[in-house]
Image (tube, rainbow, N blue to C red):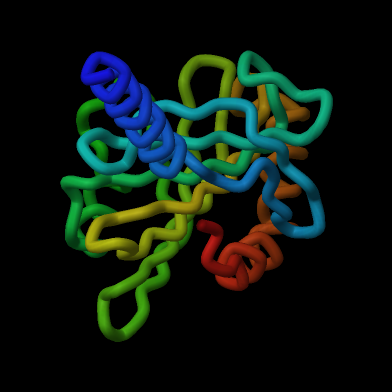
Length: 181
């Protein structure tokens, strides 16, 4: 009987731990951004002791090659929105070319939005980051729009025109994102 109780306690403990782990990684399976639906395709980290990323793509796109992506990042060791945003824009730890476009801050330094273009070879990615404090640490909502063509080409110039045309709308959509989790 004592062995049965120990076994039962052990199994209950495993079930309890499994439930806690599931609670930590629970995120929505899809997100709507700017009238488009993005479905969860990737997740890594836990947001408690390590950085966590959850990535969403439109139907038919892959992580290897996509046009648009929405991501949620949690940085448990980052506590200051302004410092985080500055580091994001000036990231000197990368060999990519980073071109800031726009930075918006609220008056109490609790939230910022920034847009930039990151270029590496023949891949350029426009990003809007909404950086805020949630659960005592920095969380970012990120929208990415990519092109697989070298800067200066006609396709790249058309892509830049698309950015200029849509950036205000994307910023408004990002500002209107409600609490996702």
